[in-house]
Image 1: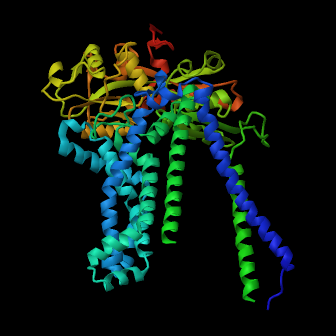
Image 2 (image 1 turned 45 degrees about the vertical axis):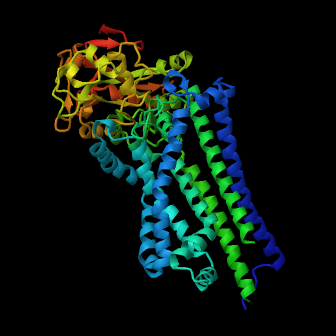
Length: 300
Length: 311
């Protein structure tokens, strides 16, 4: 038996201090971040005197003219997020059912590594593909009405591909976590495979599936680079339809910063957008926790 | 035994994490550059130190090329060139974060009057910009008035300006872009596009404009001369005047802007680099190679309010 480096008690102490320091560090980073974004963002309202209500409801965002109405950005952000979820969910759920219930061997060996590969592709690559393929397809299908092909629909499609691996992987995990006994019980009662999947597996995996969807939505909501390349970037008017070029909160932030001087009203307004984004993702995380808590309660 | 082992491996894991964190911190510190000139062993005239230069990306390649030559001649000097846009460049030089701030627009347009006054303006070169269209558009010449109509949404079909009927797809740069500001100042002449008029895209970079103008039937946009490429799209004449460097110099082509390198109480190295930028070595060949126009060639000049006078 190897000699101890130090007395047992001291070892405990060192371990406690080191891990405690790590926890403290993480907590400090989170608090500092929130404080900083809040401070900069709120100064748009309290120092520069932008009306909070008109900031949320104004229908035009032209920072260079001092017009700060974030509604088009908010609407577009939610629009692309919901579109992406709408496109992704059936595909993710379908492939998850196939992989877990129909062909588990194929799923583990081939499909899952494939999906993970998709997850590793940098967003700028998705953006490039979107710029050349999706936008061109929009022009080919809708003609002049699609303009350059950039718009909310293009953004939604690119985001759908981007969040597909997240939602699929988490859905697979969720379905796989349903105990085998549930299925066997269902089969014992004479249910077909379809009935088992629909009424037993999906139902009991519901909390994990919801988490999968919301994590996907969070990613879609926060993605900037790829969306920026395909959405057209028009911030000054409300989007009129799915083909309208528009801008999301994130794209307005990234493209606005290069033109804003530090400390200006425009700069603070951009931070306020950041604050809004952060509040939204906190809300998403809260929902995930609520679902998790409810799921735990349902399972007893 | 297994108990003590797992505890030890736990300890080393925790320790490793802490070391990794500390390492991160160190790297963070090492990355920041110091700008003070360290005394070198040779004569006092040898330049040394670091010059930070941030801001507009439009003429970054020119500055990079010049900086490389300057560094070859002065091995103890480091010129750190970063992007970030005109706004960033101006705030960096104002706040002392950079010795040189590059900008496509006059500092007066972005900063408070007092802040702008504290900066020294070095107009390194001039950039000409012109309207461009998709290669399939059969219009070669537009008047300023027609351009204004198109970019404010009053003219929406190519047949209204003498072309084959087809929707005009207006591609803009982002509000706040130097290229857009220059184009609008020259074409809209102080007027604004109505709030209801929305272009089909507002692009973040000239590169994407090149991409989109090629792909989009009936598209019109504007670019700096340095991006012009006859194989990809068509440059238009404005009021019958071709978009060329010569026409900018003699004042007949009106859409152009200065590329500024702002300094604030420039130190010796910074001033030496600015002087180098203005020297014949850069102005004589490098500026034109990069698609810009030497400021010294200009027969007209512009002030911050956009008024043009004979130089």
